Image (cartoon, rainbow, N blue to C red; front, side, top):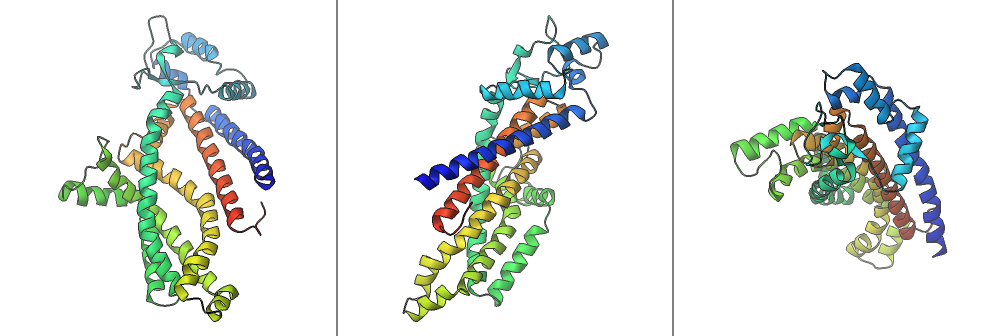
Length: 329
């Protein structure tokens, strides 16, 4: 118990620093890149005096450190702000003023927008990881157990093929084959769970190569350890050693890979895939916000994404130390 408390306290403090640094970098970049969101908010025909006054009212003319401090204070109270562009019903309200000028209260809450989109992204991510495991685990296990033989070469060829396929090309081919030609699955938008299957297949093709190679290398390395030979000499069967010992020890590098690389790949892949398929998840919401320079949405997603990465890595590291107490973090 003492180990767990010390571990989480140390990692939470480190994680908060990382999240704050990521948030500050994103916050600063949004404000120094060319383009003024006020003109998108109010429209191109708005007088310059009105544009400037609205920017001052929103605090966009204050020093960046002052703006960031105000933003962190709002986030600390659970307030992610309101969208610059999206109205209360979630549709775009850019380029239009209210009767008495721009009114932030007429814009949608960022927390509600993300809360609406997040279940779709979680569904897509979960199904994508499931599909990738169904492909990677049997191929990677076979390759690791028969290192240097044809299963190992098969795993190498499959992972090399998958890693060479661009997301956009795979998406277009799957839409053409499974939706346009065969009419087996719907592809664009979302009107039910079936709309998640083709996007999840694209996500799985991106994740599978890394998982196949990681599983095969880890299993093969553990088969070469002394403990495996000792177990065999003591009379334990090959499959007993594999399922009770090899897989347990092989799980540590796999967990580290999942925390360090797979989650980052998953988040990046989701954004692209959701945009390709017009899938109403957080990725689609964020990309539209980037095009519209909707600062509050971009900032909130950046904080939540970095926080999720830190939390998942923390849990992965703790699980790894639970499996193998020789590891120290």
